[in-house]
Image 1 (cartoon, one colour):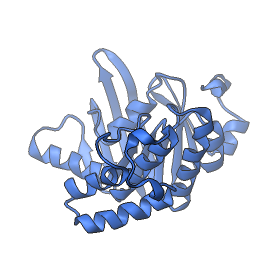
Image 2 (tube, one colour):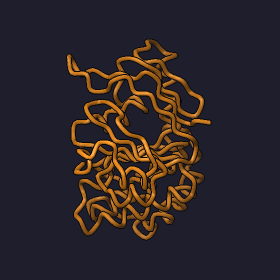
Image 3 (cartoon, one colour):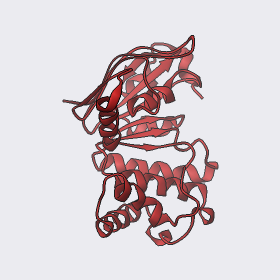
Image 4 (spheres, one colour):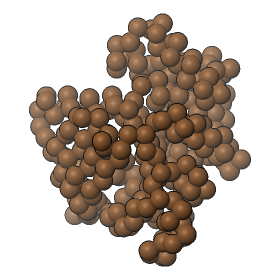
Length: 244
């Protein structure tokens, strides 16, 4: 069963047609890496899944919640809210609240958005911070963390919302080279624990090692969808080998 199902998805920015009739299904526990040149529509596709961008046409379904593009009214908003509860998102920039400690950042969503009991949220947050190797920094403020540490906290924060699907939008692109490995290792661990993941990335080594499927995007279309070994050994369109 597909946990993410995208049907006939189009996205326009004004006259610019940035996503063109995208159809994609992702089974549960699968790790899908999206690669392609800048401007090919990868991040926009990710942002349409949780309606950070409203699609122009088509439907998005996540874990049984189905939303038609361009819906109106309270019911549409409720469905978007339900989809967001099922998707965790990790951005290029870490988006941590600077005036809150690491622990406060991580429990904010579960307590405010889900109405979780604070003690329960703290227990869950500490468990997730421990799993990304950041429990020892729980009382620090983001200012005192490296970029890699901030991103690991951002991953723990997304996991503490107990999503069914994790979306990663170039999570290492704002990091210094020596910090990229620590974040990729955490992502690898999340994948091994059975999380469904869609990852927009330039890290071909990660895609090769961790992805079940690699999808190549070009000019708003999915032009290739294959297992990493097949794709890297034998690309149909060699032009995208330099996808950095």
